[in-house]
Amino acid sequence: MRLGYSRPGAIQRSARNHHRVFGFYGVSVYCLPGMSAEAIAASLRQPHDVFRASMVGRLRQAGFELTDPEPDGHCLVILEDDAEETCRRLEGVFDAPRPRRAKEMDHGD
Image (cartoon, rainbow, N blue to C red; front, side, top):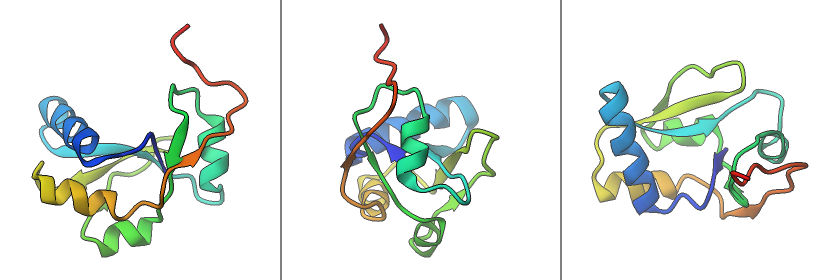
């Protein structure tokens, strides 16, 4: 599950930011076995009104690997580069954006 619209430009910016920090291209996602994407999205205090769901198997089938999830489910999808084609391929692995039904969303207030 990825928060936000995850358009190719946003994926590319995130991948480049992760490359500067970690030395590889990656984008943040959340994955908690046994929890639906809706439940994960609702549990996070992040300033995003929508989320996009996918499955680990779909990501791997498209050629992407993931880092091991942290206790809160945060992990990174690893990209081979930051090319627009790669970002579009990743975008295509996610379902259409859905509204988030969070109990509380932190909008930076």
